[in-house]
Length: 229
Image 1 (tube, helix red, strand yellow):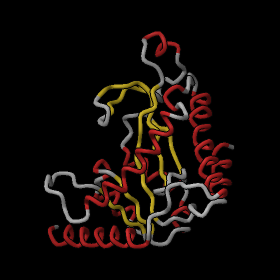
Image 2: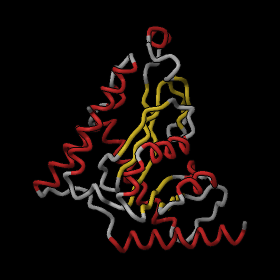
Image 3: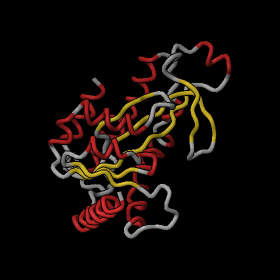
């Protein structure tokens, strides 16, 4: 029901068909003390994981969010922190293939944690995956533009945590966590829907020029990888 509410509002905006997606994950803590862990009914799902962005361990889950640059939630998943984020992205695309079919030439922007030849092959059906460098320390042409665009999803995560209290969800059961975390996404969707329909200033879709520059960079990068393999 929460997913349907998000979709109904999202489809009513001009952002729904945006051909550019940004994906990332953020920790969702489910307790710190031993007593909380012992009483929690999340055993087997929530577990201990490491957050590279915050350089600390936590017990809980990870929220994997897919949205256009304007921050509108398209699809999402709550999984254990040890599940590979590349597998999560592949599962989200595989579970709802219509989301990709509705956006010919879809471009997905991600960080270096999504580096995977297998994921590239899986998505190679009209979908381009553009990500940051992994082993090459020297910045490549166009990568500065990619990083600036990817900062947009960080602002979405900050909004979920700072203004909508994502980290203070208080859920102790599977249903409770899903419902309480899921409630934050309709709230954000409602805000974007309201602002778009009342003419208020909100992040706009990427301009065609910016999208073309990203696609050209992705094409050159793919050509270089093919030449060296």
